[in-house]
Length: 352
Image (tube, rainbow, N blue to C red):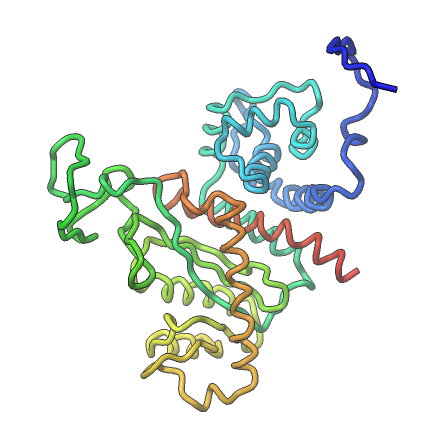
């Protein structure tokens, strides 16, 4: 018998709880439980960020949950995120909104986000997420690498620093352009950079991650301006922080770009064994290559590429929509925490 398709929609009330509408096996259930534990541990940090007087802001817990949804579902703007929150029951459940709760204005949401989120809070959030991965991460073997993050600035905005003419956008072909003499009028902290010969130089930042070699979870993350030494300098900073937390010796794998005498010698001084891919006339000798652990570390280097692929394809880091190193840094670190949040429940289920 054919069903009825009358578009009356006369029902005004629902007696099904929002919690009951979400399937018991939905992937976001495990993530929501993990996020709630992380945010509960950050409650004191939130208390120090808000005054006891004035108009109540968007609850920081709800704001962070909404931003996580924006990363998980590749929502390209706050305007679209608020639109989704208005009718998507799954989004409302994850954020903590009831069915009839009003949704925030996108401009108000963005202002609250800018006031709350900074580099320190993003690192605190990342550290609390990392603490939830206890038992899933290796504490001895790691891999480090960097990736190019295209800045929210066009090539025609990259003009001479002494050029006071308004506007711009002239023909720059054939002109020698360098970061020492030129800067972007749109994002002055972005740098013209390319990672390898033959590629197009773009206004960019560099995102750096330190990944553990057991399950590929991110153990440290940071963003720097793009230049030829940034990857090695960032790796040293992350390894230095990691060695302060570890008691024993650790290993660090990396590609050929890290095979320089300064980097290898400094890593050894930190108490880290460098398992860097060897290049001709590099700092890694043949004796190191014969060690069985060296070959194992190099075989695990692909793990560091998985977060980069997820952050650029699913997240919003292929071309970042924020300007300035500070904002790009908190977005990159926050997105790395989101990657771990997706992975941890799956790894717990596999090891159960």
